[in-house]
Image (cartoon, rainbow over all chains, first blue to last red; front, side, top):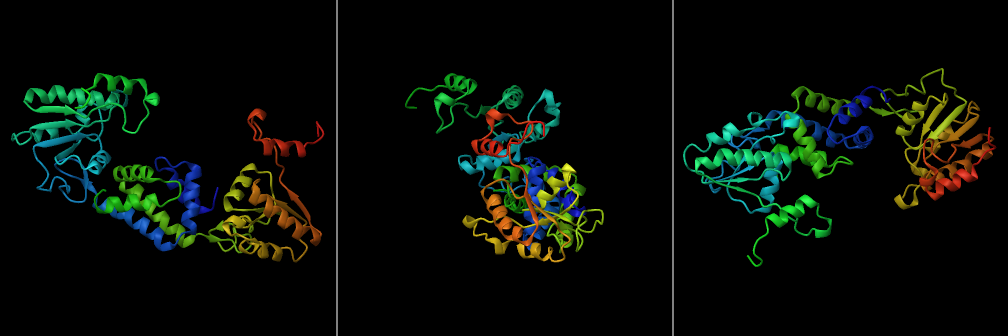
Amino acid sequence: MYEGVIQDLIDELGRLPGVGPKGAQRIAFHLLAADPADVRRLADVLIEVKAKARFCVVCGNVSEEETCRICADPRRDPALICVVEESKDVVAIERTREFRGRYHVLGGAISPLEGIGPEQLRIRELIARLNDDTVTEIILATDPNIEGDATAAYLTRMLRPMGLQVTRLASGLPVGGDLEYADEVTLGRAFAGRRNAGD
Amino acid sequence: MYEGVIQDLIDELGRLPGVGPKGAQRIAFHLLAADPADVRRLADVLIEVKAKARFCVVCGNVSEEETCRICADPRRDPALICVVEESKDVVAIERTREFRGRYHVLGGAISPLEGIGPEQLRIRELIARLNDDTVTEIILATDPNIEGDATAAYLTRMLRPMGLQVTRLASGLPVGGDLEYADEVTLGRAFAGRRNAGD
């Protein structure tokens, strides 16, 4: 046990996800030795983020304004909505520069084990966005795992009867990967999704 | 890239030791979803630790007062000084409840590669503590690695001529460990330090 406030800091840091007791101690000693202005900046940004950050009223992405930058951008194609689980998925897709439509952040995936059903996700808000026939295609970009697949299947069953094109991101061998080391499920999907060579 | 303050938070968190970009993003989203009071507490303790934490004027251990709790405790034997590299070593040794003397924190170990020589460590302060013949034994508890051993050797050469008993923590097989998996240096030290069975 350290004295008073030093132990308090280690305790608080140890509550953060992915930071164990050793990591918390290491960060605490780093901060003890750091420039006070740097530590002040971290403290300020913590306060500021709680004051400013919220969720876009349209898509549910994390944002500083009522409407996020992507939803507010008139150059983004309003006919395409890419459905993702989390805000970090938006960032990952934006990094590819492949997609010029808009997003919808569900806030998770269907997971009976964790007690998350469709009603805990932002599905009602997604349906509300489809009222005026602007949207023509929904791209399901949930994670390629059991929960993501279940969520995609649920949304497909719900959206197809509405006359929308519903697509799912391709699953298969990662580019730059080694076939030999691919797990069997990925390899199986790569077979199932095989295309004519040269396409 | 996230919007404004959210990216600022991820950047600040990513500067902490042991927190990579993914970890920073994970912590940021955890904080976004956390109770504002919890985030406030973390921010407050960051400010407080920089205002309050300092180093004990006697032993160099991290402290809230001019003199740390251990140096200020009259029940601690002033004849024994255990020399360690860092404050976290004090905490580790205190946890054993084996040692009832006092400490001296060097603030590192001799490392020519990192440009740390004896003059960068709190060795002068250690010598100053030996002036009045109160101290009879110095226990060298630097890390059992190249830098720690070099530091212990340097201190031994300096302290032995002063008529002090100078000891070094035993090095050998960790308790509960598996001989088969011990590295060769540890195993070699365990041989060199072997004692009569039953002692």
